[in-house]
Image (cartoon, rainbow, N blue to C red; front, side, top):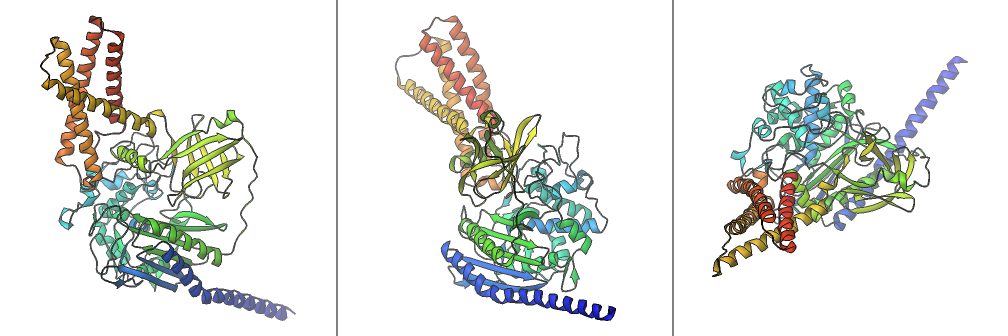
Length: 625
């Protein structure tokens, strides 16, 4: 009887296995026509120059497709095997993999103070809690972003070493480490420098030897031009090959087929064709959940960001470069399934790739029922006051350097702040989606500080600090935090101050030039000095401001500090000194002379406008290069 039972159990197991195998085989057979159609539809819709898709399953490439041209002008077709794309921030996964290799070898402790391994570079941190390597891996270091200026070089000979680059960008902690996840390029660059210090090899050499060579990624490299590089289109500015100084954060070039090999190694316990980059235990540690901005939201592993798709945990990373590239990698570790999509285009590709991924997972992932969320229907106006306000992300933004002013300029064109308002017994979210599309949604309360969007059921969490709401977090952006901003950082108010100030300065400059041609000379020496002083204040401020604006819009800021930026800074400092002198002298005139109230009010208003301008200059870090 026992023998028969065992035999029946064996038959059931075989039948179940064959059923699952046939089920996947059926899916695998129709993956090509399905993805061919979806890819072509989005390729045509967004008019992309090229689009490459690679899907891996159980250690094999089960689908690959290339559409369009890597070089339109020369009619060179895209190819998943040979066409090389700049993968942008997906490069971070290679840096983080390298860190895990050094951890596996016992050369670093992830819980250690990162300064221990940085040696010649020190993280400036006034908080009690130290920045650990783990904080850098999970983007929770609290380090201010500072990698826009200096991040590029005009040619190979101007490329900085990581040491030089990081000395140009001394890392400064502005938020308490370990508290919020905020995407950090400079944090990953610090990991690159740690790799160099611990291994004794240049970052580029280490990645080549310990990852590319091991995985047989023959069409991949770090930082330098490579054969068959896809030409970039839809870029913010025209350029040939663009050299980055911060390669650990975004400097890798790779073919889609090579990225398939990397995906397989991550899905197959660190192994690709019997070559191992990490052992199984380390791979699991790298991919598991380590932090989230709120316990109810998706979070981050050591580099991999989490997504909830059809109720299932998917991990991955995307890359976007302003010079015209976009790519995304998503892994279903439970089913050993991965997809990688890339294009030599930016804005259109982002939407196209998102559509393809959603279609793919909707078809090939079993739809698990999402946990039902209990909600209440309304929130009182008194309670709503805690949440209402403007929230800002410091992703590619800053608090402590001129990048803050650059983000202000960007906001004039496209304000990506989140605004929370109150209407009809509900909070209302106003923001910009991951695909840069404006959106509005009612927020329905779930529990204390936890809400869900009425339009898509995504969770939204607020966090308090000293009994006041300070942050808002979104489930679809686990790598980002939005911090509540005060009046002084209000974009509209600051823009108004700059406009009014410039009008006053222009008016005073014109008055100064007109007075030169007047025969009537001002007899009052103090008033004469006042007129000359405000003329020079206006001239210095306008010249310096336009110098800074030219530095930004001409993209000179990417290459470092120019002579005219140094001059502009000097002019602003002189202007501030003259303003103090002018205000003191003006007050003396107002007190001593019995002028009409109108003239006194005008004089006071001028002083207030100039000081408002100075405040804005200092607040938006125009002197912090």
